[in-house]
Image (cartoon, rainbow, N blue to C red; front, side, top):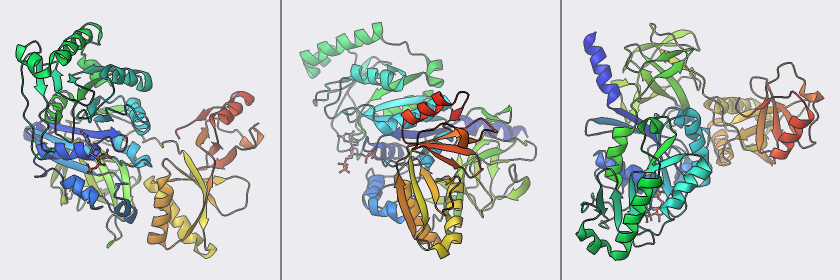
Length: 531
Ligand code: G4P
């Protein structure tokens, strides 16, 4: 037994499971590729990119993705670097992202926030950041594209504070932000690392190093840049935040790294610092107790379900994040929500470029399970000796709504089946307007692209053509007061009263103003945005 315990402790401590959050075009694909390159998971930079460009990737299972060359669904990549075992949870990079993107963050132990130095904090980053904040996971910031002109680094730090509400600690400091990038000053090692340009990151670039006040740097950087750097570093040391690892681990302080993924500048130092600081899988709350990742008892939860990944077989894959114990191929586990034991055959792990059958896995790892329709998002799987239930995964608020029905009313049965399937996967949220006799459902989605996905999948998988009428609603709010009849509420004429799939009352609003109206005119009414 001691041996198993030691093995688990060793494996858990070398694991780092994180997601990269960013706005489209900030350089996530490029960054991921460079990280895989260091891990030896791919041999030549350009292959992830090439997959993106050739509109094909293992995770790009849907035609829409192929047509557009985007990844709608999240995938997982595992690779070893030095003694670490790294799991990168990829989140969809398209503007119209979905709940999957949010849910992936529930499975991560930390996040890397990638920001385009010229653009600063952008919209999608803000949304993803808030989910990380809600979970209190550490966030490491990489300011990318420093090889081009960028915003002033002090201004970027201020943006992090004002827009996201997080303090920051620059680990390095850029020199020459006006498009004449010279390199960075590494604050920990007190050395300058010179930008070598590089050959677009086909191979790692070596840096020239030395102390900030070395005469050689005054010569290399030029008087102007050298003087400015010395002043800025002094200012940072005097007026900036102290580095406090505890605050980093609770997500109150974000270490910032400046670099350039494309030219491979600063990526490896970032990776190495990140691995030193980022937490390994930690304790997870489950039904009032705390599950220790180093425990020998197995546990995990389903955070994502994806149907028909392989068009030649109708398959459904449930993605499980392991939280404790050792997972072994073919093991039997207790499915808490279903109240029965099941055997997990053909579990899959997602390596950088292919799916493989997994033999063993530990806390922090993500496993794909073939799902004959028995799993739901949020389900707990565990050993018989540890019957726990992980806290549920919140439903994130939909921001786009449409009335959806089958174009051919004879296909209503298939239509409902398809909608049920997709709402179980968490791809869309289905609502029913109360007191009206029409057959249409109101569908809510986190990203607008989800309607295209819905249309495509219902046609392809269920043979149903849809009629979609977009609605002006922007927000759904659940009524927390049980026993309250929403028909008696005073609401603006544009507010819709509906029920969700569990028959709970939901109000759909067009704007903040109508929410305020509802709250002000109906004393005691409690509205929540996450079901
Ligand atoms: P994404 O996954 O976040 O959407 O971004 P992606 O990596 O695809 O990068 C978006 C664009 O930004 C790409 O240019 C990429 O080459 C560029 N880029 C990424 N990192 C850097 C960097 O450090 N410096 C500079 N200057 N550019 C960077 P593209 O023109 O859209 O594609 P491509 O023609 O380069 O493939």
